[in-house]
Structure formats: structure tokens, C-alpha cells
Length: 555
Ligand SMILES: Nc1ncnc2c1ncn2[C@@H]1O[C@H](COP(=O)(O)OP(=O)(O)OP(=O)(O)O)[C@@H](O)[C@H]1O
Image 1 (tube, rainbow, N blue to C red):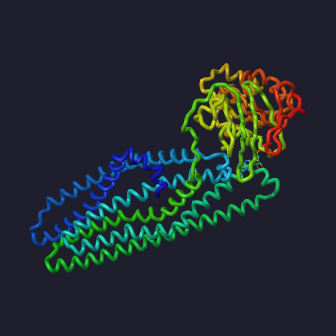
Image 2 (image 1 turned 30 degrees about the horizontal axis):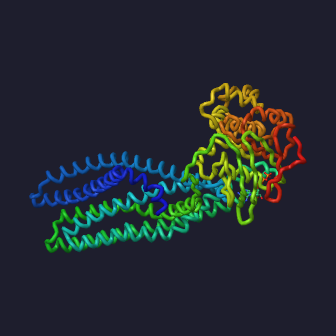
Image 3 (image 1 turned 90 degrees about the horizontal axis):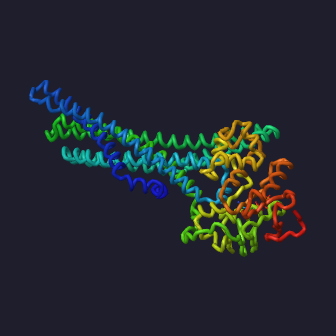
């Protein structure tokens, strides 16, 4: 559970007093409950015997019963309040840390996972880790301390009984849960994985809904759902079966213990070594203790799933690539952009090999090339999204690998091929690039990308664009993303297919404006489109992993 500790440890260390208080309150509730049962047993037996001997003092036990009842109520209330606070805050911490852990992944690492699987890891697996404190740590802690103290008390009355209780408690609260956790580990992991498969399939099916219908694949998709659903049910059944067996064995063990206790107590009572009220009190107290131990089995049967969830989250980012911000050299506001012997590879074969490029501030170029030659990869390398295998990229003479990432993103703005529109308003989507921009500036960029009229028709800047911009057309989504880039204060614009999805007239009109809008910015446009004259200063072509100046294309 090292991974769990990595996520939860800092919070627990920082809030150890509150966490300990929550555990002590849980313990206090157990003591009050067990004490109540023990005293009641003692009291009732004493009272019964008093009927025959008239020597029993009723006042002390009845006051104790009332006191313990009040203590139990108050303790339980406080335990719930503090326990929930710890559990919820810890959950928030685990989630935040898990997200931060995953945020270090590069797009290449993310590309190895299906969307649905990633969502399952982010939601379902993290949810599993949340339960570790509540279902495992807290019950184990209370059972250990309360069991130890009660065994000691029982040992003081009758040493053999104390030892027997200790052994039974160790078996019921430690050995059996341990065996159960081992037994359910594989099925727990399988359940987590299958759950993720089901989610991934649901995502794929929603994304490809129209194609599934058109190609008549509904039956096939349904069969796949059924098959995975069955696998999930089987894994969950295996966990539930093992859990039931564990609980049965635990109950049997406790039943046998009660019989042994009755027998040992009867012997001791016959030899006048143990008073009857104490005997019954200890018996009921031990039975109260067993009530506390029961939930440990529930935690133990979920331990496999918790472990599986931790493993899946750890696998996702085994060695997060930390931004190399160590040296933290400042990046100049403007300067020449130079790629020196840049080589980039996703696997063994490089996509870009010893690429050379040198651009003065304010220069605009287009890069063309057959699909799959590495144009997008080049932009990703410039944004430090894709690491270089060798070579370096400098801006204003500073190696961009040495600067804080946030600063790089202030200087370089990227319009990626799949730039998204986020759920919210037009204003919300634009302000992401420039939080302080006023309405006049927002309308200005909307006009520049030829979207102002449509936004007015939608109801203005506060018009809602729906999830993924589903109230906008593909071309409108593209223009809104483009407006976001125009709004940024970056000195270098990297535009990957900026006019994709735009009709020819709109595209040409916007491109003709580009030099005016870009002003002194350096612009790299990756495109397959014909550009109007004057849009760029130079054309390049990416071929055979290298960048060549293309003298034949004239714009
Ligand atoms: N995350 C990745 N993992 C492995 N290979 C990748 C990854 N991304 C891209 N590639 C491969 O790298 C090569 C270059 O891809 P890239 O997207 O840079 O090409 P492109 O020139 O921009 O193509 P297009 O014009 O179609 O957008 C392709 O062969 C592609 O399969």
C-alpha cells in the first residue's frame, strides 16, 4: 500500500491530530458499547442473584449503565462528525494528488490508453482508494486496541480466558481477513479491470453510435457488452463468495469461543474463582467486541480491489516525466526561434531527424508535407509536449527545455488539430486564454475569426455552447479555438491546420487578415491548404524526416 501512502501520507502527516482524534473517537465508541454490554450482563446477573441473597448493590451498576449509554451516544455522534470530516478531506486529497500524478503524462503516454479506461482509472479506481481508510485502517485500529484491552481485563479475571480471547481475536481480526484479502486479490483486480473495459466500450459505442447503426453492428456491440458484463459479474461474485465464507468462518470462530468461555467460566465459577455477574459481564462484553470485528471482513474482501486500483493508477504513470524546470532560466519576450539538429521519436525510428530551422521574430512560415510525415510532431516538440531525443530548440538564445513550462506557454500558443471547446459560455472559452480581456477585445477576436455575427445571433458572449461545443458546427468550433489563440499574449503562434472545417471563403478571408492580426508575432502554420499571397514569408516542406525550404510554392 506504498502507493496509497504516497497519495494520502502528506495529508495524514499534516493532519495527524485530527486523524488520531477520529480514530480515538471510534475507539471510545467501541469501549462505550462493549462496556455497556459487559456492565449490563454484570448488572442483570447481579440483580437476579440479589433476589435470592439480597446483598447486591444495585445503585452503582445502574448508574454505570446510564453513564455508558450517554457516553456511547455522544461518542458516536462526535465520531461520525470528525470521522466524516477526515474521510472526506482525505478523499479530496487522494483525488487531487491522483490527478496531479496523471497530469504529468505526455500525450504519447496518454495515447496508449482508451478514453473510457482513463476515465475508469480517474473515477472508479480513485474511488476504491478512498475506502482504504474507512474500511480497513479505522476498523483494524479499533479492533486491535479494544481487543487488546479487553483481553487484558479478561485475563485479570481468569488468565486462561484472556489468552483464549487474544488468540481468537488475532484469528478473527487479523489472520482470517489477511487470508480473505489474499484470496480476493485476483478477483478484485479483475473486477476493477473489467469495470474499466465496460466503461471504455460504452465510450467507444457512444462516439461511434452513428457508424454502429449504419454498418448494422448493434448486435455485435451488444454481444460485447453482455460478454464483459458477465465477466464483471463473475469477478464480483467470486469476491462476494469469498467474503461470505470469510464471514461464516469468523462467526463460527466466535460461536466456538462463546462456548469455550461458557465452559471455562462455569468451571471457574464452580471452584469459586469467578463471580457469576463478572462471568456473564465478560461474556457479553466479548460478544459486543465481535460486533466491532465484523466490518473488518468487509474491508478485507475489498482489499483486492483497492490493491488493483492502486496498481492501475501506478501503472498509468510509473515514472512521470517532470518538466525540467530545475534551472528555471527566464525566456525572453521576443527573439529568434531556432531548431538545431532536432530529432524526435515515438519509438525506435525517429519521426524527425536532425531538423534545422531558424526564424526571426515576426517571420511567418507554412509547413506542408504528406500526411504522417511529422508536422504535428514538430509543433508538439516546440511546445515541449513531445520530448526531444536529441538537439535543442532555442528562443531568443535560451534553450526552451530550461525554462519554466508556464513561461513557455505564455510565449508560445498552440492551436492543436483537436483543440476543444469547453462546456460553458463563449466568454468562458475565450477568457481561458486571457482572463483579463474586456468585452471589446473579445468581440474583436471574434470578428477576426469571422464568428462575431453568429455569436450575436446566439445571444452574445454569455451564450452557452454545451458540452464539447455541441451547439456549434465543426467550423465554428475551430474558429472559437482560433479566437482563443489570437487572444493570448504569446509571441509565437503555432497553428495546426487553422482553416480545417472552414468554408473556402471564410478561410481565405481570415488568412488574408493573418499578417495584420499577427503583427510582430512569429507564426508557423501547418497546413495542406493553398494560402493566399502574402500570408507567409516562406514555405517549407517536411519530407524524409527533414525540413526543406520549398521554393516552388509561391504565396
Ligand atoms: N503518440 C504517438 N505514438 C506513436 N506514434 C505516433 C504518435 N503520434 C504520431 N505518431 C506517428 O508519428 C508520425 C507523424 O505523425 P504526425 O501526427 O506528426 O504527422 P502529420 O504530418 O502531422 O500528419 P497529418 O498531416 O495527417 O496531420 C505518424 O507516422 C504517426 O503515426
